[in-house]
Length: 485
Image (cartoon, rainbow, N blue to C red; front, side, top):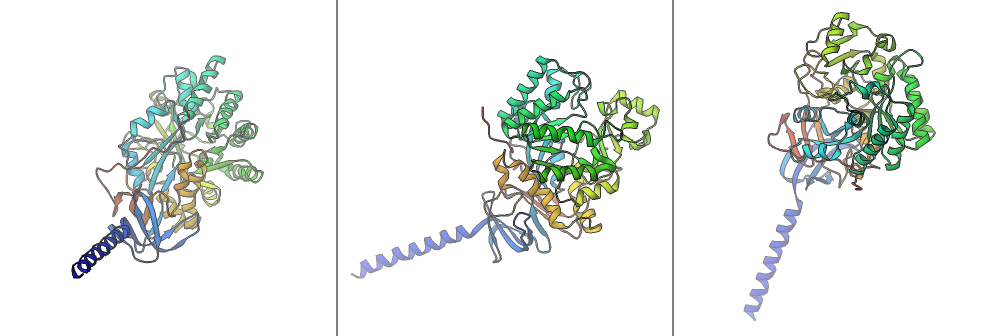
């Protein structure tokens, strides 16, 4: 009897120990972000909370203390959803590091895109610091079909010649194939394919509509003179979207509208109110950037855009151009910075609740590039939110995280778990000091990390800790629509 009692006691003791041990393991999170001001644009939560992360997901958001294998002290800091950049051409490791220091956790090339979706994703698999994704691009597809000699943007037939009926069939078939292979969207830069007819463009919209894919469009014109105005170009794609049912996203509306940006925004507001699926974006700079050899600078560009040679800055040297240096560099090819956007247009776009933030960053090919790819998000948070009070902090975070995720989640359902801080969401998080966050990259010295970004997590893995890059981690994952064939 005593022996049976002893055995029963031992079994109960072991069971109790096992239960306690299991319970302790269940309460131990991979990472805890402790005591931060958690700001979630979807729910409107703005409160001090502790966030527990397990298996790359947000497992708990709690007022009570949490235990983790690693704890990030966020007292006095904001904990925000990681920023989603819909428009970043620099999809290489160095760009990703600069973007991570700017709070970006997902970097997407949705304007120019690619002509080979499978190859594009394969090249980044397993060695990306942050998440990545791409569109099937009308520009690179047209270049491939028409055997254009350009590398990034067209220089020959794809820019300056109408496509033949056979070529048009190939273009549409390639775009359809890219969407079948999981491209997030259709990219289009009509300003760079100046000879593409209105019929060609609307046919691409038809292909996109068949897949429920948004069309991310650099408008046909950004001029101030009729009939080549940004307003006329916006009317073209709105008509295409209405006629086909394709969702429409207008890229960098400030650089297309210039001083007429408020009028273009009024058009977007009006079409949204009438039920059209249309969105837009802007970057927080008074200058754009593109290749000087592109079709944008074909004869008549000064009159069309209302700028002169002196409004152009050669990125490699920082020099302002003259008639002589313009002709020299146009033959050479390379990035030029265009000071063509009024500050009033930037402020209007950033204050408007329907305008997302996106960088339009470019590949880092040398010491001088436009600073927007390195500093867009911290410039908004530091300069336009804190210093200028153009918009509030929650609205800024909404423009950087939730709205981009919502733009893509119908076609790519994985985005329903991004841009939010909620249980079950991907642990893509940016922790920053709202009192010190600021851009450091300038037009003169563009390759400088932003300040005030303390910690950045991608799929639950820290890539920035206490302001420093974590070496040897590659948690970035492919962001892709479902593959149908």
